[in-house]
Amino acid sequence: MADGIGHGAKERVASKLAVESVYKELINADIIDEDEILYYLEAAFQQANAELRRNAAEDPSLSHMAASMLAGAIAQNRLYLAYVGDCCAYLVRNGVA
Image (cartoon, rainbow, N blue to C red; front, side, top):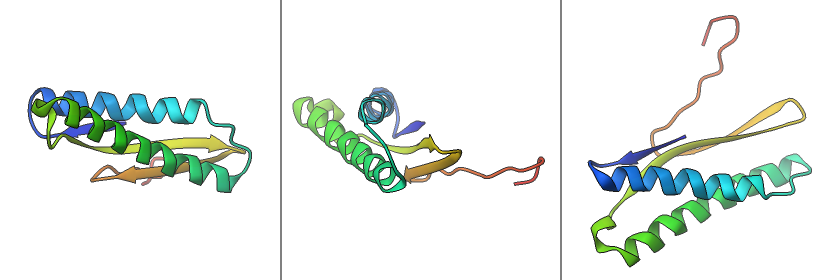
């Protein structure tokens, strides 16, 4: 999940690029254990940041675009989350957060 920061086209482009980039990195990852999950989540976020910066460099109208983001991966009945910016996740059990 990504939320573009700002107003107008930049925020939509930023959130779309971030989600697509992280998805592409994680769907192609060959994750076997917990250490690899954490590595791939971090690498996916770094790749998304690089993608946003690259697009902003190519198109000056996109300069200063940014996105907050939350991503997760499930392995062996465990959920691993990573976030950047002001995104958050809540653990809810039996209707209680």
